[in-house]
Amino acid sequence: MNKRILLTQVIMTFLMATTMSGVMSLIFTGPSLEWLAAWPRQILIAWPIAFVATMVLWPASMGLAGAILRPRAETAPAEAPRADEAA
Image (cartoon, rainbow, N blue to C red; front, side):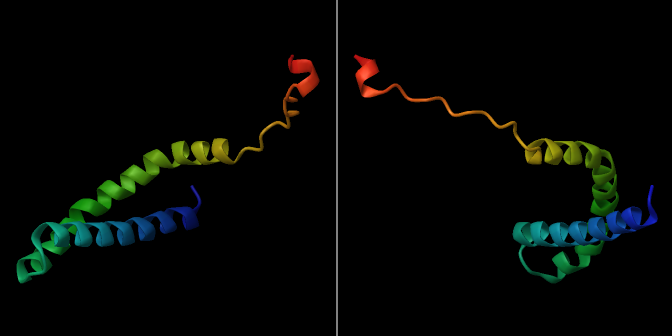
């Protein structure tokens, strides 16, 4: 694995785990000193989960993105019947 990809995954998962654990726990408990004290522990729990999830799900997400963005084969549009042929 490329070092840049691995480092990017480490940084991105840290930022996402920090943001999501902070926001979700803030919504759940509201702003307080207890929330602020508990946040670092939640980051330490969320970060490895996020890192492993991205490493496992990366190939599937790349395949799905490729399938979505794959150029479609050009097909001729079906012609609508003309008024004189419909009768």
